[in-house]
Length: 358
Ligand code: PLP
Image (cartoon, rainbow, N blue to C red; front, side, top):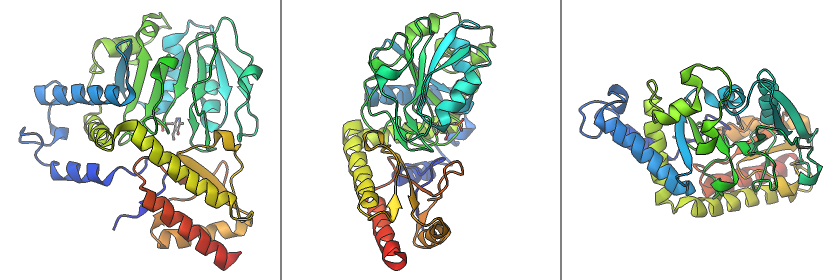
């Protein structure tokens, strides 16, 4: 039996998607082989890749001003490729640090550009107010992490009035709600949360940014080259793209991102209400204005109870609730594939656990 899986990533995928993949694993689309076993240059896979791009564009209302890329190397590789592609050697790039991942991004960028910290929340439970950011006049771009997967801090909107294009790491929130793509210069996301299996990075990049000279780099590391070759400079992550295509179709069937966003808001709202209403037994430290809809870190007032909570939750069919080691405690990741019934089951378990241990 499948458990309710609260893993932060790789994370649960919609069951309907996995069942479809299972049904066509051996023979896909009349090609007499698995999708994993055919050329990425054949007509069948090329059509699939085009459909994946078409559906992603439809979901996010991406205009023709943007290229859509399907890359490899994980979001971490982009921490290095962003400065290489978007900035001249030694040029400034501004970073807003709101948690673990945006801190990693600025550390990595420092090898290629003058990576500046425009604002640092310090304790990662809030987002510094936009007027306090110290932005450079000459920065190549401004980098943020839209949703900090470990700390549970999420920009609810794109920050305004920036002197340079906004680049955002959407790894743990892309496709969780509608966004206005036109407010961003570049959006990137590792797939293994809301998109599909690991091994794929989805990137949406404004075409004018592809014209930047950047820094000397191999063709395979060049966004412009990848865009020119429809992400097929070499063999792409074919199975991951196939699965992502099924996820996009599933999302469209659910009513698109407006419908999924409403569901995600209800899920997160119910879980935060349960935590805040527990009389201090459970606690989430994040400023309510920037609490993540996807990743909900929380602690029990007595640290000694965490191990028991995890063991009993797991036995009750609620898996992968351990907090990241950087923050400890517990974390419920409630991505698109987590049904409302799964969040209700978790809340029921939390109340029961409190009644027995309060
Ligand atoms: N950025 C965010 C927000 C993440 O959550 C993660 C991984 O969890 C990463 C970057 C790193 O992604 P990858 O493991 O694909 O390099």
